[in-house]
Amino acid sequence: MSADAQGHQAGLNAYEAPPPGHSSGSRLERVLRQGRFAVTAELNPPDSADPEDVFEAARPLAEVVDAINATDASGANCHMSSIGICSLLTRAGYGTIYQISCRDRNRIAIQGDALGAAAMGVRNVLCLTGDGVGVGDQPGAKPVFDLDSVSLLRALKTMRDEGVFLSGRKITRPPPLFLGAAENPCVTPVEWRPDRLKKKIEAGAEYIQTNYIFDMPQFEAFMARVRDLGLHEKVFILAGVGPLASARAARWMRSNVPGIHIPEHVIERLEKADKPGEEGKRLCVELIQQIREIKGIAGVHVMAYRREHQVSEIIMESGVLAGRRPVARRQRAAAPAKA
Amino acid sequence: MYRLRLWSVRHARGLERLYKWVEGTMVALDPLFARIGYARVERPVAVLESGVKGLLFDCEMCGQCVLSSTGMSCPMNCPKQLRNGPCGGVRPGGFCEVKPWMRCVWVDAWDGAQRMRNGAWISEVLPPVDRSLKGSSSWLRVAREKAAERRHSETKSRARRIVAKAFAGARRNEPASAPLAEEPPSAVNREAQP
Image 1 (cartoon, rainbow over the protein chains, first blue to last red):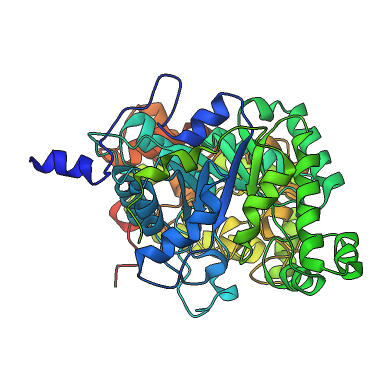
Image 2 (tube, rainbow over the protein chains, first blue to last red; image 1 turned 180 degrees about the vertical axis):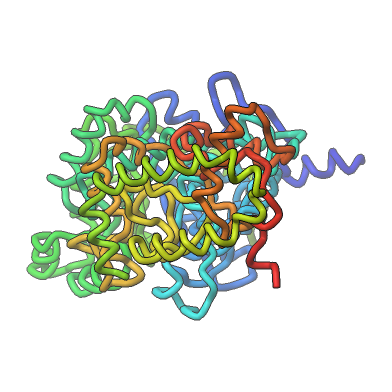
C-alpha cells in the first residue's frame, strides 16, 4: 500500500480546493450558505495528553452541532492546544473550529499553524485577540499580541486568497479556511460594536460567534444597527448562549471573566429558583428561541463550560434543529473505534 | 502623561489640524532632508518627536504613527497594543480589561474620532506594527513616503509590498503604517543596535 493510500485509510484529509462559492470545504460553511440554522458549541479542553479525553469531551456535543470550537487557552489558562484538539477531531470526522488567539503567538507561529491546521483537515478558524495573561493561571507569562484579531483576519485572508505569507513568499497550496471572528455586542462601547463588526467583515470575517448574550434588549439594539448597516447580509452571525449553573456562578463570572455582561434580573431569576441548574438551562433554551426570531441571525454558539452534558438537551428542547439531523453525528462512524 | 493623553483626545480636532501642518512641513522639507541624508537627520528628529509625542500621547515611538486614524488616542498604550478597535473585555464605564484604573484607549479613540474631520479613518483596517521600526521617527517616514510617491520609487522588500497591498486602505490614509520607501539604516532595528 502506498503511503498516500495509508494516509487516506487513517482518515487523513487530502488537500482539496473548496467547492465553487465557498471558501473552504467545511460543513459549517455549507450549512450556513444553505441558509439553515447552524449550531456550534465550545469544547472544554482537557488537561491531559490522552486523545481519548478529547473524544470524550466531544461526544456529548457532536450529536447536536455542526462544528465544535476548541478554545485556545481561554481566559489565559493553559490547556491542551486548540490545534491539537482540532487535528484529532477533524481526523476522526468531526467538524471543528480552530480558535487562534493573538496573545500567545507571533505572526510567524500563527501563519505556520494556519497551514499546519489546514493540512490536518481543519477548515474553520476563529480569529481572536485573547484575554490578557493577568486573568489566567500563569500571570507572569509574556503577552505577545503581535497581531490583533482584525489584522489576523486580514493576514489569513491574504494567505488564502493571494496565496502568500505576509512576507510575500508564495504558498503553493493556500489554506482553504472559513474565516470567523468574535463580537461582544453587550459590552462597552455598545454604540461602536456594530462598527467594529463592520471592520472585522472588511478584514475578512465570514462568520461571527458572539460572546454570551443574556441581555436581549441590548442584543436586539445591536442587531437593529447591524441590519441598518447591511452587515447581516455580509456575514453569518451565530449568537453566543450558555446555561448558568447558579446565581453565585453567574456573579463570579461577571466579576472575574473579562467581557461577560449578565443583567441583574437574570441573576435574580436564578436566585429565586428551587433548582438553579434547571432554571439556568430553561433560561438558555428561552434565549435561543428568542434569538432565533431575530432577523439576521444565522445560528447559535453554545458555551456550556463544565455543563457540556446539558448542550444536547438544550438544543433539542429549543427546537432550532427543526428535525435536521446534526451533521457532526453522521460522520462519527469515521471516528476510531472505542472499546 | 495620562492626563495630557486624555486632554489630547478631547482636543483631537485641533491636533488633527496641527498634525496636517506638521506633515506638510515635513514633506516640504524632503529635499533638505534628502540633501543632508535621512540617515543623519533620523536621530535628532526622533528625539524631538519622542519628546513632543511622549508628552501629548504617551508615545512609545513605534515608528508607525497612526494617531490620525485612532482619534488621537495612541493604540500602543493599549496593553494588548490593538490597532483595530477595542477588545471584548472593556469594563463598564469604558475602563481597560487589563488595567482597570485606565480608560480604554479605544473607547477614547472612538470618542476622539467623532471630533475629527477624517474621523472615518478609524474604520480602516490597520496592518500589524512592524517591530523593526521601533524607536525611529514616524514624521520622517511620512515625509519619505509622500516624497517617494512623487518620485515613483519603491522598496525592494517583498514583505513591505505585500503588507502595503493587503492593507491598501490603511496605507492610503497613513502611509507610515505600511511604508514602501527605502528606509535609511539608522531607522531600522534601533532596538538591536548598541
